Image 1 (cartoon, helix red, strand yellow):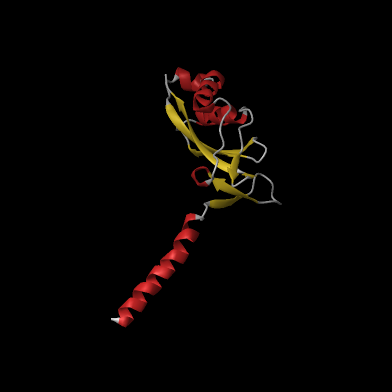
Image 2: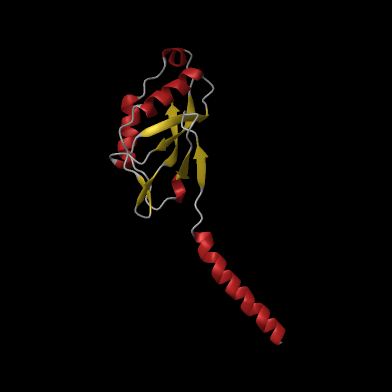
Length: 146
């Protein structure tokens, strides 16, 4: 009986020590932003305390994409549609950098147009962990529909 009580108490103490540490784990990756000499740690969008935000919020982002996006002629002529899934980093100054295509639409002109649209974005509000601004990776789909 005493042995079981000790084991139960030890288990509770261990869980009490481990659970707070598990809540503090952040998903951070190391990225080489087109420079062969420096690497930086980038936080994932869902694992920061304050997420970066486009000026005007989600509605502003949709309006910006719709105004800026131009359907490539070849894709329009051949009635090619699709979704381009892109990732980019919102830096500690709010600038967008390191734009990449994660999954293309099957047509290179649509992929290039999605990269161009994201590259023209204005500064975002920065993501924060605690009170510190951190670089954050954002994943964004750009749709092309006729």
